[in-house]
Image 1 (cartoon, helix red, strand yellow):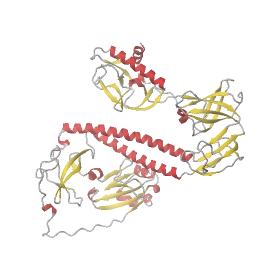
Image 2: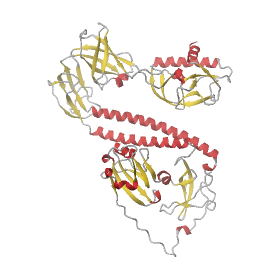
Image 3: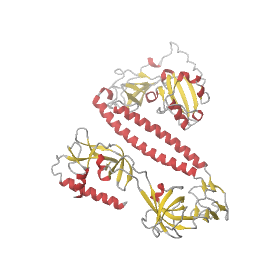
Image 4: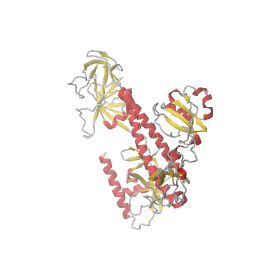
Amino acid sequence: MKKSRQKAGFLIAILAISGILSACNENAAVKVISVEELNSGYYGESVRLNGTVTDEALQNVFLEENGIIEEIYVKPGDHVVKGQALAVYNTEALKLQLEEEELKNKSLQLQIQKCQQDLGQLEQGKIPVQTIVKKETIPVKGGRSEKETVTETQGETQTETEAENNGQEVLSDMTIPFKGDGTEEMPYVFLVKPQCAIMGTFFNKMSEGPYWFRLEVHQEDKPEGSLIQAWNGNGSLLKKWHSDSKIMVENLEAVTELKEALKPEDIVEETKPEESSPEETKPEETKPEETESPDSGDEWESDSVEDNPPIYWGDGEDVWVEESVGTPQEDPAVLAEEIKKRKEETNQELRNLTLQMRQSDLNKKKLEKDLEMSTINSAVDGVVKSVSDPRKDDFSLSDPIIQVVSQDGWYIIGESKETMLPYLNEGDLVSGLSYESGMTFEAEIREVSHFPSTTTMQYENENVSYYPFIAYLENTEGLHKDEYVEMTIQTEVSGEEGIYLDQAFIKREDGKNYVMKRGDDGTLIRQEVTLGKIVYEKNYEIVSGLEKEDYIAFPYGKSVKEGAKTEEQSANEFWEEANG
């Protein structure tokens, strides 16, 4: 890998020097090449394994780190067959970890959906809810508090709760809950309007978890309004719904399929407090004394209460909020700048959430695989050679808890580089070639150790660990014991679609990857791209940001800058110039 990076570095240096020398006139047109021509494509790769033919393979079973053996089923001298259970792990801790990861995964999904919805509104020139936050002075009983955070949205001032949680008119799998985490103790809460339509996709989403959820109808469709109706839902009792299904809230209690899963709640009407006598002084009759706000210099602060009459939000706490003047909606230039800023912030948040989501997906897969592998099975037909008790004080993780020696059939034993492990799975068939006899064969991967070898004979890369594996030979014709063989594994399906660019065309700055692309007006623009896997050691998959119809420039040289004029060049011409 180091050599390939050095080669790429030399290529960039040579091309950069070439670009600088040929760009004496900084106003000269920059050559751009079709992405389709530069696309290397990806047709799969293969990895090679080496091993030795033997008639006596030894399966070593090691204890997983932090693993607890629940029970061992065999003892020394027992005859076992392939697939027979040897021992089982305690899985309670794994199940809890998986449940936690699934909850985290669902939470990230909802956050990503919210970011995508916000970006959609920003692209339309609208400010999403809770995106412009300003400080307000608050008169309260007996004086003023310092500040209150309020959200501006499309010319209206709202409290954060109101802005985010007005009643929903449609519930679908894209709806973000008002609060909760989907558990029985803290169900997802959705605020709905009396005429809300609930789509089949919503019920399907709740059943996936499964999640506990609650539907609430409030007075005036606002969270602070009194509760009018409520239903408590259990996603595990929901049946599968067609995505086009639609049920109105007012008809919920009549739908037979929901009788068990969605229970209506009896709402006790709140008693209204007695009206105060005429002699009592009402809060609104006592106007707070006007004093200078401690943040009067804030450009969003209002100058006086007289200029901006207070608005009472009705939260029951006798708090008065001033509506400020000079909101960004009234100034197109300020609004445009705010939208640009919010786009950058939301895109960055989306990138961070996407990375967290990828890690969460990997964690889930690993935990699911660990659960599947909680039962340790024999990889060979043979005899149990030894069994060690991991509960004893003298037990070491470097010692196998069980050893099984094969007694029937021929095997190939070898070691796999750790970078090949994702492509090496038990049950896979691999093709092989004997260097001595020239014979070809097929072998079945029976076991891949979870622990690296401590006595490896591989010296290709001292920084890489090697993991023992066992492969079973069905047909041994032409092979003999201790013969050295090579096997090949295809890592990907050939002919995969997508864009794969040489890393020389991709630059990275401030943690962002980008290319220099020809814009709609024919001049160069900086285009951010999302990268995927690396193929052929130096080509990057472009996940988003580019299309095959686009044209890009080699991103080095004095003339290569945003706004530069462009001129088309073929990929062949570019590489001929680069190779000089």
